[in-house]
Image 1 (cartoon, rainbow, N blue to C red):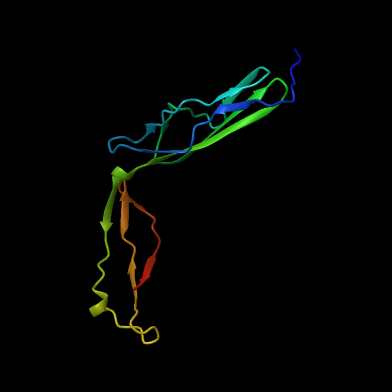
Image 2 (cartoon, rainbow, N blue to C red):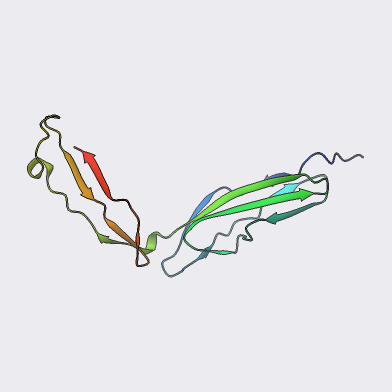
Length: 142
């Protein structure tokens, strides 16, 4: 039988994007996913360009995985996905704004009638003792 070397390899399984929680007592966690699988009519080699795999310890943040399968015919296919490690357990509130009762504490806007704009500073959130940038101000129309 004749093999068509122009037909590229095809991934038969590529993990979906995933989110995992980082336990409070750890600095990193493994994603534990099944490696991508592929099929081809030629000899194929597969590699992950960032040097990571399912057992690589991952710290908080977004981690990209980029697998490429190359065959003898110089064809290739890619499998890309991301693992987001959430560090929810280590977030703490450093400050929280106090907003008064708008009916009593905020004057009514003369142009808008009964509506008023209430503004406050963002609360500060600490992640492992470091301030997480949130922005400067927020406002809501009541």
